[in-house]
Amino acid sequence: MNQRLDAQRNRAKLVAAAAEVFREDGAAAPLDLVARRAAVGRGTLYRHFPDRGSLVAAVLDLRMAALERYAATYPGDDLLEHLLVEICALQLDTPGLMTVVRSSPDPRLHLDELTRRTSSLLSAAVHVAHRAGTVRPDVTLTDVHLAVAMVDGVISMLPRTPGADPVARALELVLRALRSPDRAAEPVPAPELRLATPQDVDAAD
Figure 1 (cartoon, helix red, strand yellow):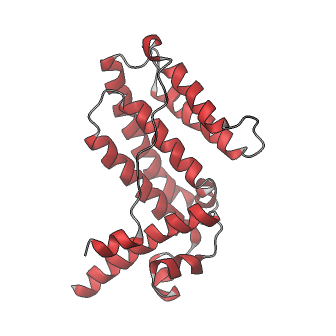
Figure 2 (tube, one colour; figure 1 turned 180 degrees about the horizontal axis):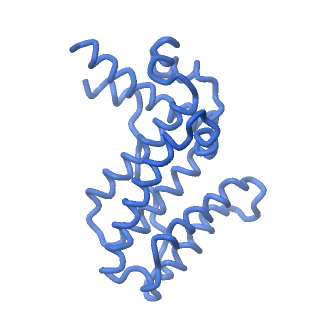
């Protein structure tokens, strides 16, 4: 039983460490850096994650779970735009993660469930927004996915995109297009999500 708990803790530490290393050094960072950050051996890393794609997929799952917890406890009617802000902040935090997963041996294994969970989360938020009148009546889930893709396109063009802060400007324009007219000029919310660190995993024991 203790071995199982140790394995679960090591896996959680590796995912948290990978999120930090990929943020600092990019999705192509050496995996040895992840093992060192998690304070485990290379063998432990590869027992849990045989390739880079599976580790990146676990980081994406960590981020998705954080978004789901955030949505489950968010008290306001403007959840949709807060989710968009958080999703875009995570994309900006570590661009290129999805590219790594798409190039893995079995990308659908990792992406299909992530896509389903993302759509479910955003669909529920669109429903809340329509009921509260915080978005235009014609806004659809497809529109929201397009909004995320458009901001991601700006992120992928950094630093070639003109403007002092093109991502912030793109997000401002996207939210202005989705919001009801009486809310169009409101400021863009600041991101609030914080992902667990390896130290958090150790402290939870």
